[in-house]
Amino acid sequence: MIDKKLILDAYNWRHACKEFDSTKKITQKDLEFLLNTISLSPSSFGLQPYEVFVIANQDILKELHPHMWGAQKQLFTASQIVMFATKKDVTIDDEYFEHILVDVQDTPSEMLEFRRSLIDTHQHKELRINEDERYLSDWAAKQAYIALGNLMTAAALIEIDSCPVEGFVKESVTEILKRHNILNANLDVAVFCCLGYRLNPPARPKTRKSINELVHFIN
Picture 1: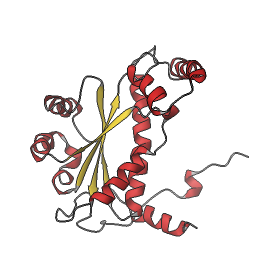
Picture 2: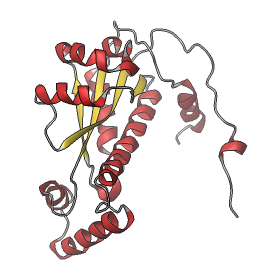
Picture 3: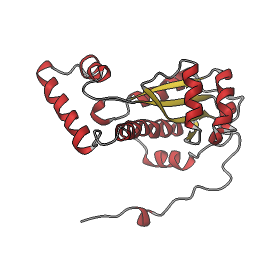
Picture 4: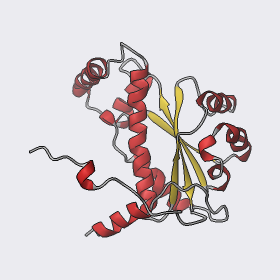
């Protein structure tokens, strides 16, 4: 049986680590475990419309640093820097879409047209991607954030600290990553996550709204 208290303890222990102990490194085994939690995370129709980059190149991190105001201490002290980049055009007309349905999900041939139609209808009627291309990007980013949440929770369960980073100048970061051939024209930077071991304990206890204020039961 999984101990529920241990899970809640991990949630309480986790915080957005602002500075890591640069002398402590995540083992390859633990890193592989964390990357597997990303891979196994749910996404809309299982399309996983994102790619994940573990950036260890110090020269690239130095270039990124002035443009990542939300990670000034974390960038050089974290053990690993993980970046989620979303795919810009995951529709039924895209090669990636066909790759996922056929090569990854092994969709039976008699089901292919049904799945294409189902996803196409969802994207055009519910997401309304024909009205604004940003709707498709927003949808892809939501899928990446599901994986990000699972990554941070899994890290906390094995007492690895994390800090999600949205505070960066997107245009500058994108230009640097494209110049280094990390991003191509069909990838868009979504969010970073720094991983490692805290240098200091949190300055104060975790604060959250009460369950009564947060949750509403509709009977």
